[in-house]
Length: 438
Image (tube, rainbow, N blue to C red; front, side):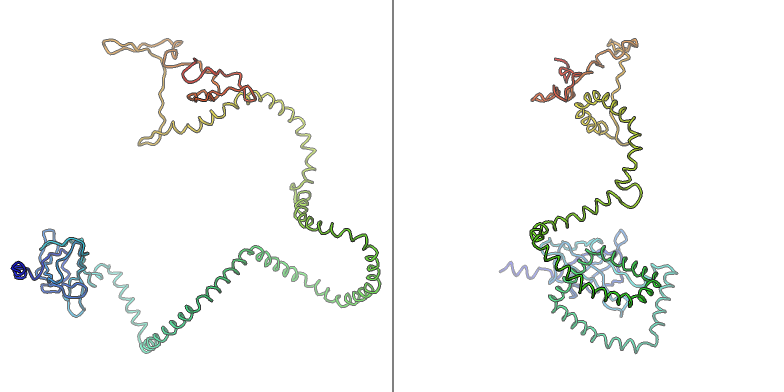
């Protein structure tokens, strides 16, 4: 009980903090500090920091303190009545953050000033301010004398919003029907889009037909003039067809029915074959005789005799060349994997790189001198030209390796490759491999 009394009599009634701003923003001593619009403290003092910033000392009521880490502060304007009617709006940090120390400093990175309208205008150059002035004057002239119309528009604006709200509510109530309509429309448009080429071709052909009809208007007029006589003659012809030809044709059908009856199953099976054969026959016709020069079999047959005369002398030489090159290809064919591996591994030569890019590391060996070590550190003695390259630095003699001899022999003995069949290479020596001849 004594400790509680001491705590209640000695505890402070407010918390003091220091807020650093880029500028004071026309704050004065006694201005309010608000949290969520509610007064939470007052400004006690405004002073200048060593780095030229404004430091505002505030006192926060005990009901709103202590402030937590993560708190931010912003200078806001209460109204446009007074020049210095400003206050500090605080956004407290989360409750799980540690409390700020008494008389702690909120840095400028956590605070925001206020921009006055005159500062905004001062940031604009003279031409921009003049243009803005003319824009405002233009709006004033535009609306001059039209206040009644503006008031009437404002009068009808709420009913218009209500009508729009009722319309959107009705649309929202009919959402399933609207969705089905949109789906059906999408399907229809998709079907039309899938046949866009045919529709385009139909329109083009219709235009061509209309152009052709318009260009043959005289012939069409003559045809319409002759049409009544043709119809009269056609009526007489159809009458003779009905009275004479059709009865004779009916007798022919009755006479051939016993013979044509067994053909019915064959014709029913022949119909699918004919349907499938139509595209093939069309393509075959294009292959045999297609409009245009040098594009079908007939043109090829016309050009075949000169070609035969031209190749009658070239083919024997080509056959001879192939026969003579066969041993070369037989020798090279087993080495194709080695050649491919060499090409695939060629990039490893240029893998290193420095500031200038990739480079190839080479080790030139000339073997033009012999080195003799002595007390002076050693001397180089020039070799005769006929002995250069004959030392231990260079080796020769591996000239008949079999395919795969350039790798470490695998345990299964598949390399080097030796074959007695079509890939045989009698010129290679299986003993020449990595490590030398055993």
